[in-house]
Image 1 (cartoon, helix red, strand yellow):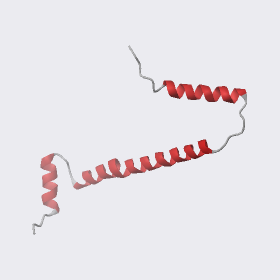
Image 2 (image 1 turned 90 degrees about the vertical axis):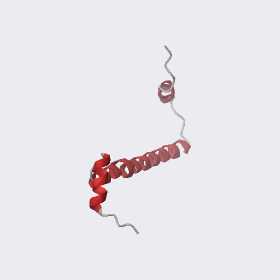
Image 3 (image 1 turned 120 degrees about the vertical axis):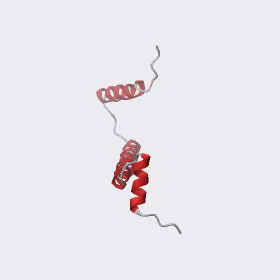
Length: 84
């Protein structure tokens, strides 16, 4: 069994240009843990939005229908490719 000390790992990290163990921990915290939390929140928001869309709505006035149509068209247009 090979015993590797923290000093040896730190030295290898420095030689590879990674930095210290705390740098690796900070990277893990910001890139993995925080990213996971952001994705989870985005999923929750999308699920809530979906649930709102599933609920039956009352009849909209013509002004509300026009506003909803404008919003839907603006969302759609933003995804269209720009041709030159």
